[in-house]
Image (cartoon, rainbow, N blue to C red; front, side, top):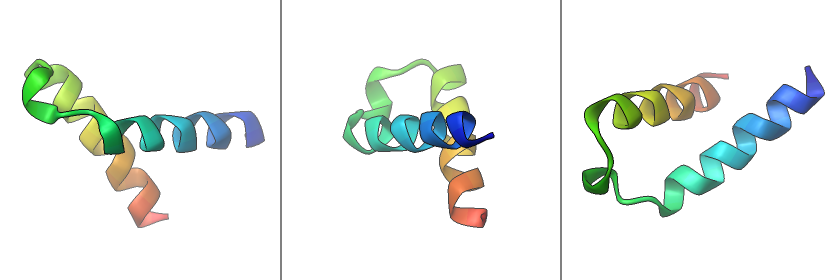
Length: 41
């Protein structure tokens, strides 16, 4: 569980640096849901 949390935080940091317009819709949706899950926790 701790490893999963670290991976989510790592992904969250990456998403802060990625321009969403450069990604396909599926990737945007995946990153958005991962960020939403962190904000909701």
